[in-house]
Image (cartoon, rainbow, N blue to C red; front, side, top):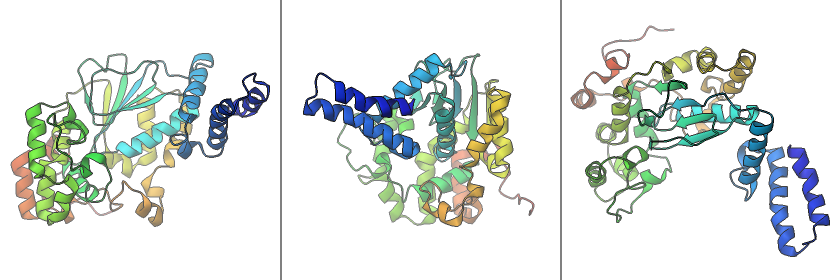
Length: 338
C-alpha cells in the first residue's frame, strides 16, 4: 500500500487539471510523508503534516478490506510508572505490523472509540461497564514502594506538562494544573492538589527537598494516587493481573502468557513475543538504558535503598499494608540471592 501511494501520487500531480502551486504543495506533503514513513515509520509519522491522515487511511483499508482487525477490542490497564511506556511500545509495534488500530486513553475512561483493536487505559481508570464480558484485558501492577521511588526520581527530571506547570490561574483546576488521574476528580480534590504545590511546579517542589521529604511529598502526590488505584481495583474475571516484576524476571514467558490470555491466534503468538523482545530492558546495553527517558536506574526493585525508618513510617501511616494486599513481601523480607 505504501508503494501505491508513493508511485501514484506523482502521477496525480502531473495529470491534475488543477496544477497550481498550491495544489502541488498540498499533494507533495503526503508524498514526502509516505516516503519518510517507508524509510522510518516508527519515528516520523507523528511529526510530518499529513502523514497521520495517510496512515489512518491505510489502516482503514487494511482492517476493512483485508480483515486485519481483532474480533473484539482488548484492554491494557497500566498506571503511571507501572509499565505504561513498555506496554504502549510493544502493542503499538504489534498494531503496525498486524494492521490493528491502537488507541491510548488518559484519565477516567467512560467510553471507547469504535473500530479500535487495542485500547490502553493509560492510568488504569475506567467506568464500570466499559469493559464488557466479551472483552479481554491485562492489568499491570507494581510494588507500591517502588512506584513511590520511581515517581520521585522520574518527576525530578521529566518534561511532562503537568509536572512543570506553574500557571494556576484557571479556577477549574483541570489538567495541566493537576495530573490526568485527577482531571476527573472532584473540584475539592483538585484544589487540594494545587494547594499542596505552594505556587511552584511539582518538579520544583521535589528538587527543593531531600530524599526523605521528597519521597513523602511523592506519596502525597502522584504516587499516592497510583497506589490507591491499584489497591482499589475491582476484580474482573476477564482481566488478567500481572506483576511488572514478574514481567521483567521472565519477559518472554510473561508476554507469551499475555498474548494467549488475549486470545491471539496461536500462529502469531511466537511472532508477537519476538516483537515484544525489542523492548526488553534486560536485553538493553548500559548506554541504551541511560539514554531511555523513562528508566531512572535500570533496577526495578530499589525501594530498600531509599526507605529509611522515617519513610517507612510515613508509608505505613498513609497506605498501611498496601504492598501485602497487592501480593508483595513485607519490609522485613529479603529475597533470596540468585
